[in-house]
Amino acid sequence: MYKLVALFTHPADPDAFDEGFNIYLPLTDALPGLRKVIVSHAHGGPEGATPFYLMHELIFDDLLSVREAMASPPGLSAARQLWAFAADNVSLFFAEHQEEER
Image (cartoon, rainbow, N blue to C red; front, side, top):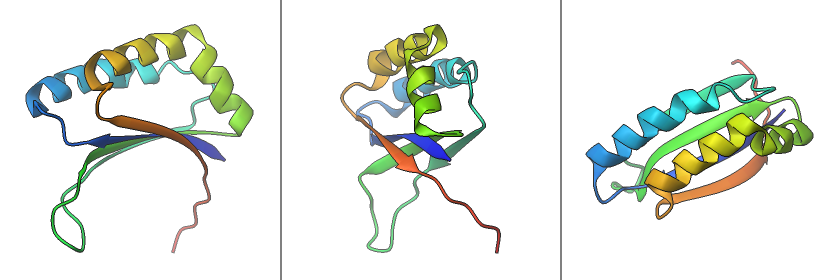
């Protein structure tokens, strides 16, 4: 499995960010090949405060599926919304995903 991870730092205006994210999130549901979505809100770390605000993970079968989803009309629509509200505080990366229940 592969995923596209959007890692957000703290926004200057959390309310405006949350509003933009709530528009963006349902757009990602239309991505072809999407298997699972994980949204994680950061609440500090072992050392206390963290620069991170939120992590959005979109999980697909393989890297080709991630790339095809990003290039699809729903992917381009989601990307436009993402850049509209979070261009200054988001980093995107691909990651191989392995998951085991314990």
